[in-house]
Image (cartoon, rainbow, N blue to C red):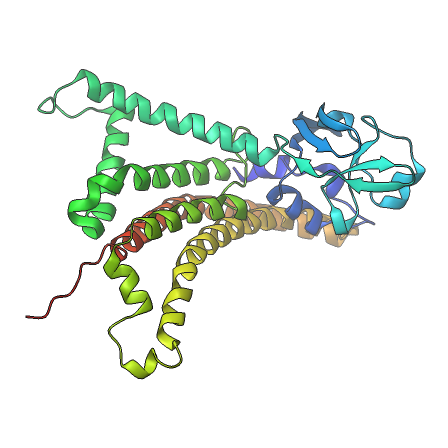
Length: 357
């Protein structure tokens, strides 16, 4: 796996003024893009070009391929060069890097609406299709068999084991009798996150995408939990937030506790979002950094660089393999933590009225 990861490093980012541009390599893998760089063969990059769909207030809707766009390092060179794809570019300047800009006279104007199929979006579609196929395979078996039939084996049995494990060990202990009501959502969260994490560990397509390392994805998942928690919350839940059973001086005249409790409504989904995003992003960065040790050593040049590069190659490979194996465990743990905390937050919003004896 480490060797495949090294092969996927873009050659154009490996060297910069005689050294290794580690920043470019790292951000090139963890950031979203309009194309999917697979590897390099003989100095020629193997790239999957993706459709770009956007709206410009000057020229209307456009559907183009990313291969029609030019990448320039800064706006000055853009203004000096010839237009590409009807005057559109993928900005290369640091302040607006990665944005689609249009040449309007001598100025570069960002487009106002962009719904392009980027690498992250493509990975999302692939993972969603894979998830549906896995679940429908197990569901088809259940449809054709009775409850008292022998348990399935193979892949279907593995899916059944995962479903029952998540339901019995994560969802039911938190939600009790309400578990069947919220199990579909929580099971979907678990399997989507788990499959996405596993696919992200794979260093070659259709894997290698940094979907859960993209804060937009984790923000949407956390937002879904936030809406379920607060829309289905009981009257007692809202009463405890705005008029909890605390001393009166904590509520009047300064609503200290209501403010803290209301603020806590938003900190829960933010914690879900940041925890999943940070852990998966850090795993990708560490794995790539360990692989880059080889190139950094060889980039020193001379006999010393050759000796250090040769000596560090097995160390780098072993550390990368270790991190990959550790990442597989982290993939499951992060899916489990997100699902379990979501179940706990939903349970906390379904508190009942406390009646005095």
